[in-house]
Image (cartoon, rainbow, N blue to C red; front, side, top):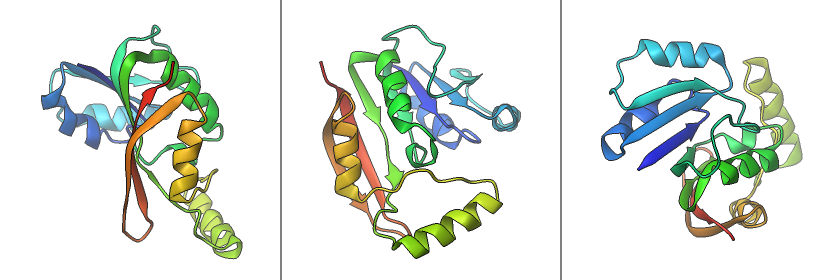
Length: 165
């Protein structure tokens, strides 16, 4: 299995998935994140690439699985990201896309949290309640296979989907 991780950050997921796949390409928009990730010890089947998630440089239908963890809500154009993922994912491939669910926050709380996070360099563009997130994925060329809410400080929606034909 060839896997792709989008928004790898410091590649924690990629390193932990490496033993279960033939190869994993860990990508991030930030060259500094990839530089930091490369300094860590990683298995030989982990490869790094600076990529714009809305315009991935890979050939069509090359990956068996794409992981984008806790990142779609920070993407300015999550629809374009899903379109790009759909292009590089094999027709029988698997999208694994857990994300934080902020949709339950009142607007005043959302604005305060967004402001505070932006000050430390972390900008959030979308807020979904769990069902809204599932609908969003389903409306953008994927068919959600399974999902569940994991309770934490912010609820996390764990989701797996397949490309829709």
